Length: 113
Length: 110
Image 1 (cartoon, rainbow over the protein chains, first blue to last red):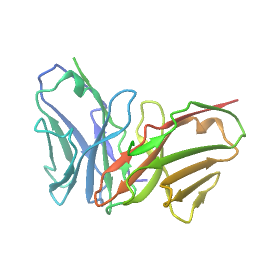
Image 2 (image 1 turned 45 degrees about the vertical axis):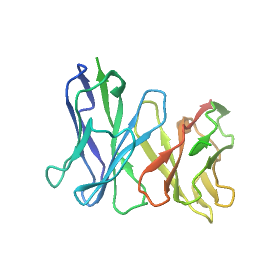
Image 3 (image 1 turned 120 degrees about the vertical axis):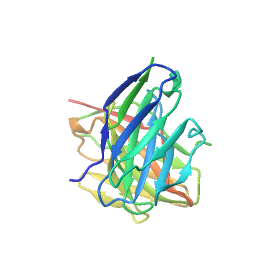
């Protein structure tokens, strides 16, 4: 079964540094998403991406965050000037059409020290 | 009112028993509904979509009541492998994002 893959599985970074989280969505999918889950809390939407542009973003997704699809397969989340509260699991997801089930990668655990 | 509300549990249920979870959502314009399961420190995995007519997948039955904005999940003949957190998830109302409940933790006891 096709799957969404994410790298790295765990990223440890000093506060103030920049991190890039990488995702390879399922190959025929057109919609891409990032979510995060702070330990012990619910999964929260960050951003959706379609046709090479952001289609929706949450209040969490401020100027500190950016997304990019640099080539035909990768989808990245960049976090600039990381803060302690950015520590969380970050999940990438993709879907083939809007409202269809989204399939999640196994996540990147981001730890900010 | 929370966008998606679930009883956090925990539900501790003996193996072989039937267990039911409920969920309510606040956005009446929501269009798609799902149950995901999440194992500890893992990604959410789609369990099943939920349709207005109700749907069944093996031991799992999901129901949607649009008038009451209520979703349910029934697990019959529960197995040890069913132990997980069950996430009620809603999508739509003109956007693509998934809105998650906090999840209901289920532990099946041998």
